[in-house]
Image (tube, rainbow, N blue to C red; front, top):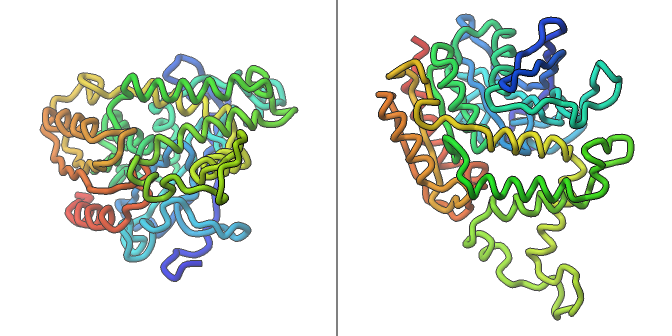
Length: 373
């Protein structure tokens, strides 16, 4: 355990939408009962005014910080959450929940369908970012929190942070979207479609009904390999791998001669041990459906008092700088107090998980100027 870690944390479960009081989804379908797995760090103050919601990315989960008793792997944003860190647990009550549609404890396609007693599989309804945020709102209500101090996240998490500000401006004081977009470009949709097709082309996918037989491991591994290529930059791949060979000579066989090939195979086949293939399909589709451009953002208000810190990274070609600048321009039209930084980094899209020092400085200064009043 790292010296500055918040230590052992325990996941919690919150259930709601027990039939007939189901959650109405954006698609028009209903879902219930719903379970959300979540973790909290720090303490909620007496006024319940110091709560920060951390929203995870595509393959993330509720385990954002600390370690679990039976697993010493630190949370995915452990360097950003804790005493004295950007999200200082001496000051803030930090909440992170696994999104609906996920596979790490929250209700998703691998959950048991109460109508059949079997996993939902593709009987699970398509969900959107709006549905994810609506589920989170129920969790925030459960805590008795009338207004979040802030919602923050990168990539998919940034979309959730933006939607919180758009759908519930009266329930949030600040939003910090990082390395994200108002909507997916055709290129981003194309990457996600190739990812989905690689899963569905695996015979083991069985049209989504594979739970009694095992994961479509090959298809999911290839999907994750594609994803990892988009997460890194050309420069970071050059610095990390260049054209280094795993052995001294070329094999002249179709094996992983180069270190970068071995890395992608390791990442791909390690991913299938911890993530559900159908959840990957559902969440990427939700990201493609997301659109807060133009009048979709706060459609009934011409201005907002929500304050924003928008962060992008120069080497991020999956969510390039211009998309964050589009966010800033839209917020300016809404007369929103907006601070924007385009940070220098060689890590590509992964930078929001790595460039902790710069993010800490920006987030700390921003939050220090945010008052619950």
